[in-house]
Length: 237
Ligand code: C5P
Image 1 (cartoon, rainbow, N blue to C red):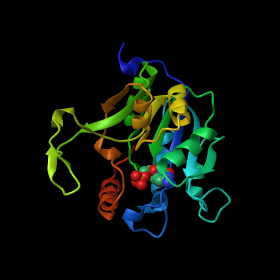
Image 2 (image 1 turned 135 degrees about the vertical axis):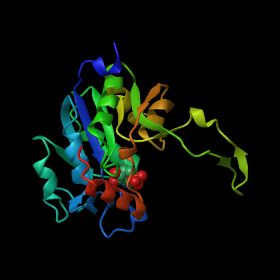
Image 3 (image 1 turned 90 degrees about the vertical axis):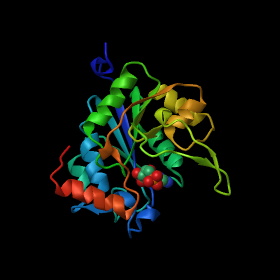
Image 4 (image 1 turned 180 degrees about the vertical axis):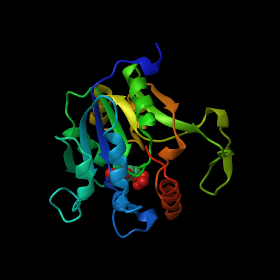
């Protein structure tokens, strides 16, 4: 049996969209920056709702941008399933994930954590992650081979090592996990730079599945211009 044949599971998705996006230099939080007239968040949500087996969605939004607040993006209501939960984010991404997990339906056995800033991530990427967890992986993240040679450096910028490029992957989201594994990792009191690293710290193996160049994160004005060119070229999910 291949990963793609794995039985569908009950999937919950936490979309983290509470970051400020300082590096983008926009007047609004990054997820609310517009791309061809629509927010990055609305593109992300449009794809999330197509995930097979989807049972629960939580949107983690900045204070002031929740439903009933002045910043709320009514466009997303058009896409969201009934029962979608909303919660305010925290100071760091990990805090926002934790807040989202608390609101996710406890019946979900697969949990995906997705950055709204990776707004053009195709549904097929979500499917590969869900399939890997459905096939028994504790966690699965999309990743791409690294094209540049990567160096480690010390505080003075002197190179201290050159990791074998063949063993490196640039990872993306959605990051998917067995729900119990992820909840236990968040309850551990440990902290890490991403959800996969946290799960690794609690002793589980996390697999990398094939990522997609379209799952890039909008971070800088150049990334936004890249996303605009993709949308203008007529790309659709
Ligand atoms: O800042 P960065 O681009 O790495 O953030 C990745 C994702 O995490 C974004 O979608 C952002 O909105 C979200 N985030 C969050 N809460 C924070 C920081 C980031 O939800 N405190």
